[in-house]
Amino acid sequence: MDNWDEIRTAYQVAQLGTVSGAAEVLGVHHATVIRHIDALEGRLGVKLFQRHARGYTATEAGEDLLRVARATDDQFSQLAGRIKGRGSDVSGELVITSLDFLAPQLAPLLTEFQRQNPELVVRYLIGDRLFRLEYGEAHVAIRAGAAPDQPDNVVQPYAQLAVGAYASRDYVAQYGIPQGPEDYHKHRFIAADNRDSRAPYHKWLWATVPEESVTWRSTSGAALEAALRAGAGIGGLPAAMGRNDPQLVEIHAPRPDWGSALWLVTHVDLHRTSKVQAVLRFLKEHAEDAVACPKKAPRRRGIWRCFASRLWWPGHSRSGRRWRMRSRRRR
Image (tube, rainbow, N blue to C red):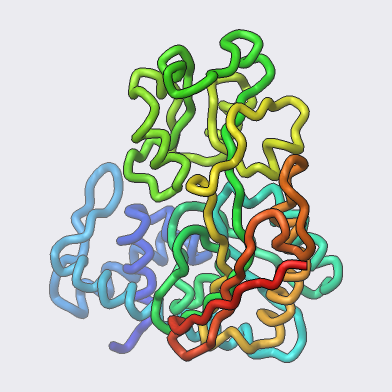
């Protein structure tokens, strides 16, 4: 192929569906986008797009081109991510990803890390999507649940998240506090809209609370938290957030089966770079700030004191899958 610019243009049009959207992303005039598409179709001898009033839709040939272009774009992104992380100094872009409920604790920590490394540009990406470290989409991922087992990832333990059930003071003033499961039908609950949610608290809720009592649902963790604070009902929150907010009432203390392990995940190709090692050290040193001990939790020594009596230590292999467990000696 003589002109990769034309393929890149076609890829953006297929992704976005409009000439104007592709032009904005590429930083060119919309006439340039149209010219590239026409030239590429002329060179290949097929129509790549159906033109209509709402924009462009890829034909079967266009879908074939899109698949190849996407794979190529992924490979270039992977290469760029590796190159960016190879420097010996802590500078340039640092991409961290986590679930949105960790943002209130992690954002201040990343700000402090940037303050210590002013040449750094922090990109903090949050959401339920699993960012692909193997394609350079992030330097470090903080993930919850079972230990990730993707090939070529290095997985390290971070903290154990304690989760309890909370409601606003306004809600408690109106509905009171349930004394047990027999009272759940008299109350209003907030839940993830996805009944197949992997979050332990939401799995428990959908299995335990009557469906008619689950009256406020959302796909957004931030929206669920906002609804809880506004008095929509009883919902799950990290104990570090719920117990430290005087406007919230603890309805049910954290339960072991509601909690979740947090993991620091990096790709093996970037794991040993100076930038990644620096942020990993910082996050581990400040683990207690990221998932602070609830006020009512029993105090133990060490940064894991309110969450675990045993720690997982990675017996590192290239795949990150080999583990050994050490029992912690109590002091």
